[in-house]
Image 1 (cartoon, rainbow over the protein chains, first blue to last red):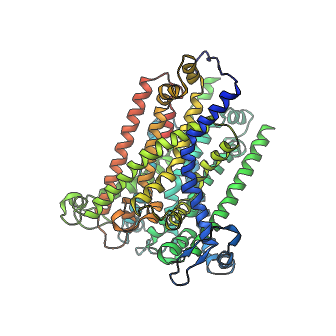
Image 2: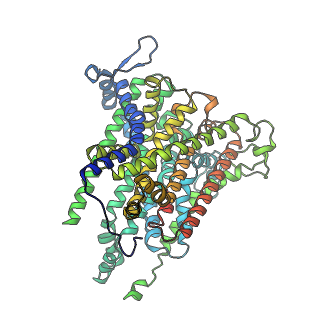
Amino acid sequence: MTPAVPLPAVSLPVTAGRKRSTAIWATFAAPGVGWLITFFVVSIYAVMAVAFGAIDPILKTARPKWNPLSWDWDAMSRTIDRVLHGDLGQVFVRTGAYIALALTGCILIGYPVAYFAARVVRRRRGLLMAALVLPFWISYLMRMLAWTNLLQPDGYVNKALRFLHLMDAPRNWLNGDSYTVVIGLVYGYVPFFILPLFASLERLDGRLIEAGRDLGASAFQTFRRVTLPLSVPGLMAASVITILPMAGDYYTNTYLTSGSPKTTMVGNQIEFFLQRSSQPQSGASLVLLLMGCLFVLMLYYLVVTIRMQRAAER
Amino acid sequence: MRARVRRVRRFPTLAALTWLYVLWSLLPVLIAARISFNNGKSRSAFQPTSFRWYWGDHASSVWYDDSLQTSMANTLRLAGLCMLIATPLGVAMAIGLHRWRGKISNAANGLMLVPIVTPEIVFGVALFFVFSQVYVGVPTGLTRMMLGHVTFTLSFVVVIIRARLAAIGTQYEEAARDLGASRLQAIRLVLLPLLAPAIFASVMVVFATSVDDFVISSFLSSGAGDETVPIKIYSGARAGSTPALNALATVMLLFTLLAVALAATVVRWANKRGGAAPGGTGGLAGLTG
């Protein structure tokens, strides 16, 4: 709400005053910026220094090289080779496949829910909104813990499936099962998908949909030719918001498969290199490769978004 | 015209699908909470209710198992410290970045957004390396975890506060300045009260993010003494664990929901009291995540 009568914006355009105010605002921002440089920028640089550094021949610990001129690309090229021709390739393909499947699940579940919440629901709107936000306040690992309870061999999922005669013998879901991982990822991340999509669908101009109907299109035609194209930006934003954390997720996977190697994703591999075997250099190069992939994805997203905005303005 | 537009279309399938989703998203958690009241060791089926895993069992209930208690104390201490540090740091940074114009400011703005799109595992590995290679003097365990959590949550605070700053505009502060307040007085007496709901919202978001964090804590943890609740739940999933884990998770859930309910009440009360404040819904919008 802005005041009914806008207050006159009185400011004195004196150069000295402006300089001083710049200094004041810079001082305000300085501690936070300094913190981010100390603990974020330097940290990311440390990953590079380790990946392009050396390994202590006896202790097998990392010996980072801080000078970019003396960086050693051996470990990185070995890792890239393992991705392109060796065992890590499978891990990347599996990660991509799981993310694609989980994202499809998120769209199939998330789009109808977000659409209903943003454009249809009237009664019990508050209740629905609370229910959609609630998963954010429940610890992620508790939500996964709940599934390890349900998916036990004598758990309620097996009982329900046998009751419905969809399965003869109880299935061991928690022993390296790709279905379990994908379902876990969908369950874990679909709330992150729904909220941004909801926000975008809510802002969608309803008059355009009405115009579609008024001009004689059927409900389905209007949806396919008006609503769906208009929701593309929201769908893309929601997809990026879910893909980024899923690409680095390892705990959902390990937790729901008892750490089985049959479902290893990139995150699991990084965690293995760093926490369960001492291969800091391989871990660091894999982190950089993952960051590279996600950077390309972000760049693509930004280019497409800017292009769409320009096209809309024209 | 309006009447025709208002013609309610019900979409019964869509409604059913949506409420089915809500059921699917919350029912497993309710079942897990119910299992924490089992009087036996089953983690997969309901048993008669008891408080065995809360305080009945003198060896492994939440109240008597030291490691579970420690994990809870660690989690709350971390989240508390994180709120105390990240909030003022983030508020000052948001005000500064919002007003400060120039090339460095633009760069700082871009830098501020990067942590939000960085996957947690990248964060965790990077912090792990920086503490083991550069800041080796920083005490291991909770201190490092706290520094990591602040770094991870700082940008959320800045984004929430900046949204509110944009809604408030500069007129109120300029009026205060015209009436003779110094710049700092204008911030303290006018801007900060107007920002209060957003500050409150960011405190809640920092709390929830810190309590929920597993990856960064796990990479910076140095042993059993500094385990947090998520680490405990994660490492306790192996065979042989008891519903005490469910009890632990349920207690933490209650903590969080109480905090959210309290926050929502305070924000509603503040909005009602200062009904004319600009951007009045900013606080609640921030609370939704």
